[in-house]
Picture 1: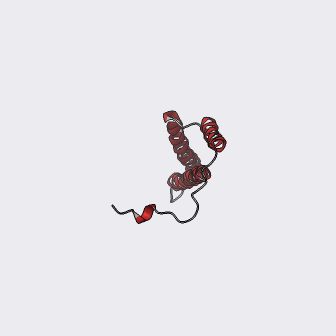
Picture 2: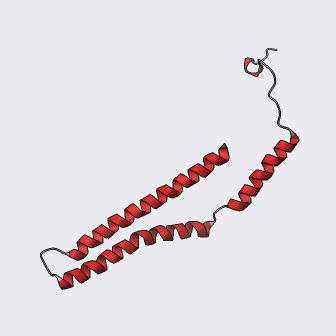
Picture 3: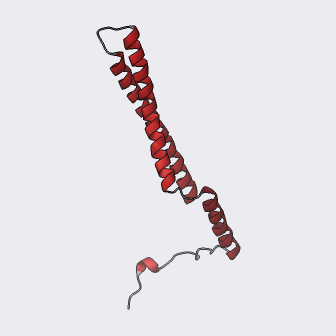
Length: 115
């Protein structure tokens, strides 16, 4: 019977944390989990709605302003279409920025939890 070379240790054995430290760490994790809570289905649906509105509102405002400009100042190009596209672009950039900020916050929280 041969010994596995990976199981041999050099140096002193690692110090086990005391019972009080283990209980304290577990209690801290439990309190943090209670404070933060896990987001449920309604939270996810609410976030999708928020992102949808952040795209839809600039589009609608652009369309309304475009219609008003087309009625007041008729010309060779459509203000409605141009401002609708500008609203779509602005709304998508707004949603992208918001989602990336939330992603960064979740990663930071996860890194803090892992550390």
